[in-house]
Amino acid sequence: MRHTCIAVFSIALSVLIGSAAPALSQTAPYAGEQHRAIKSLSPQDVDDLIEGRGMGLAKAAELNSHPGPSHSLEFGEALNLSPQQREALEASKAQMTDRAQALGQEIVALERELDTAFARRMIDHATLADLTGRIATKQSSLRAVHLTAHLKTVALLTPDQVRCYDALRGYGGANPRQTGHQHDKH
Image (cartoon, rainbow, N blue to C red; front, side, top):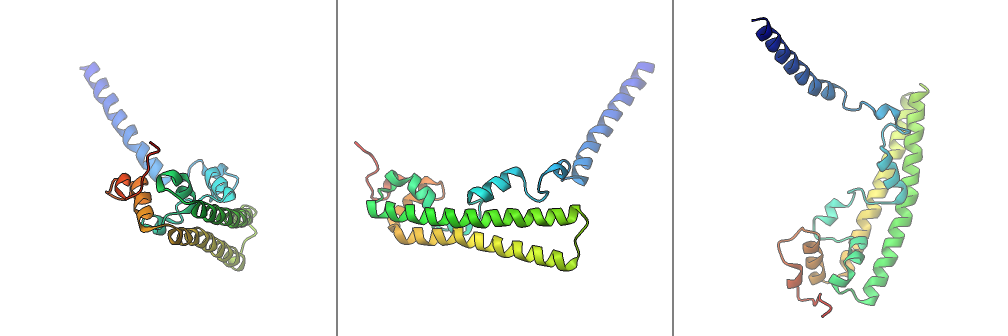
């Protein structure tokens, strides 16, 4: 009987501890993030911003058949890009990357400033409004840079190339080899 009571108690305790763990993680979803250099940005976020990566900012274009320059160049052979298309896409990508990197660095600096103001308890409503407004404006500009590059890209590609791109990216049901382009080097 004593062993049965201990076993039942052990099981009950295990269930109680097991059910408490998810509750703790739900009440502290940011646990560990207090050690970040900039609390609102993960190290990956900072790196993506500084490097000018897309970070999903152009999904509205990408998922609505408006390819981006980077992946279009990546699939250049399969898309059968002409030398003129390749040159224009490379220029568009370089322009996008340069502008995105500059804006990304500005966003990181502003987020650092916001974080520091909170950490030092030197923030008031006016400073908060100013910093968050400036961050929002930079984020908006960054998104526009990426979306603009998609607008430029779709204007450079033929409808068949766009369909092929979508298929290569997994967005369309069509086989990329059924677009009318010769993709094999045979």
